Image 1: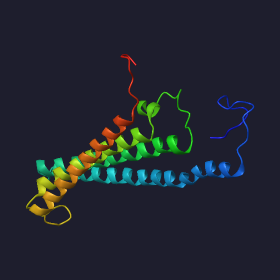
Image 2 (image 1 turned 90 degrees about the vertical axis):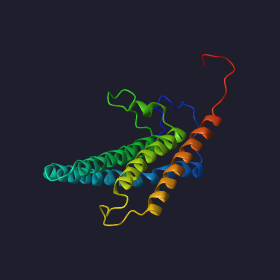
Image 3 (image 1 turned 45 degrees about the horizontal axis):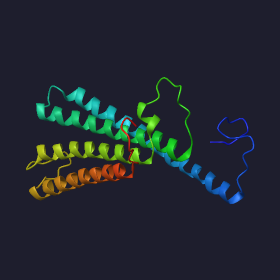
Image 4 (image 1 turned 180 degrees about the horizontal axis):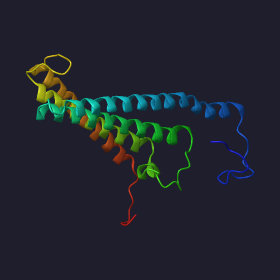
Length: 191
């Protein structure tokens, strides 16, 4: 975000930053290649989604109901990961690099107007729980059978996945609780 005399948010008499603070502030642009890389990853997920969708369409008649459900869950998994990428790309860029200035754009996501680092962490935690839930359901369905990758889902493996999923949930609750504690308490009602 450039700070110029033409910017209505910057007072005309605002002093210029000293060189070291200016360098530190400008270093936020080092994150730009990271966000561009996530956009490339988003493209990879679009290709993966189309591949899985084609697999579902071409094998619908030969699949059992359970196999169709697992492919649909894989599609939902890809969409959830893609949503997670969008939250990180758009929210992270807006929060840590520069304003996107989408206030008047008709397609501005409603969540972007109140996004900050804390909100982004909670949204990410919720998305991770959703993704983990899909993987755990797939594991439960394959328990005792040879899975998609040929690995046998053992009782111990299922147990550890359930424990890890529970830890994701506990972490999300912890992050939300800490965020709630950090909010100011208002004395009057209606604030």
